[in-house]
Image (cartoon, rainbow, N blue to C red; front, side, top):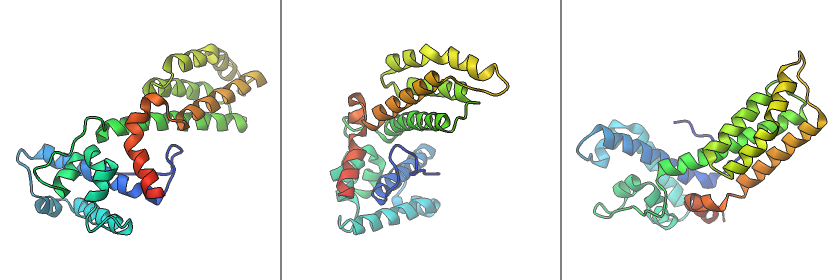
Length: 225
């Protein structure tokens, strides 16, 4: 499972390791549960899936570095990660305890949310950089991608779609009807302004999405402080 921590939305940092490993571990345990009708013992899963054993060792190492105790459960529970990744909580915590809280999104919900926001931010960043480099060959195509990213993110969707529609045909005509694509200065300025507006909205984390992002923001602040 490839993990990219260098994208613009979160950036890199050692404080994200616990979250990333917890999500990876939950995903592997979910695969195990899907493949077998009866619950497997953790020892058997580790024997069948060496990656699970490695992630467990990494989680314990992280917990030790953070002075969270001999196991990561205390940190996972206090941060909400045990509820976001309930299978991790089940195998590492008390077997009869239910590690679930409906106010905390599951891994899939969280990843869908952050992926859509990250896609929106990356697309806006690339398009703004194209304007600065005076590279217009794929401007209409990237503006269409930006429109699609706005739809997926559901962030100020109606307003931003209307903004993009305002000059999309003008930009498409200007860049696709010439041997050497070019844009007038007022359209370049409009694209830069639009991209910077979108980037600012994403980085501010819209109020409607704050609840879904609360758990990871909490652990970033806790571990990063």
